[in-house]
Amino acid sequence: MAKFEKLVRLRNEKGLTQDDMSNMLGISKTFYCQVENRQRRLSYKFAFLIGKILGCKPDEIFYDEVMKYNGENNLK
Image (cartoon, rainbow, N blue to C red):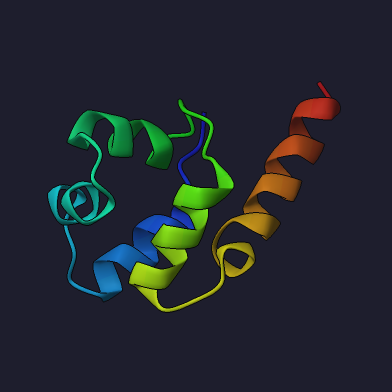
């Protein structure tokens, strides 16, 4: 399963670690890592908070990758 590449890139561009993100979101590092690795579903609340931390809208981070991922999986 692919990571949310844009999420990882934006986080790195801001100089934030997974620990930083999990602390700012009030969740465990394990939970946050699972989000980045698409092993956990992300609520809109957390998508919104991630966007706020990274300075963009949730759709800018997740929409294209989710649509691409869902399309590829529907072809299998």
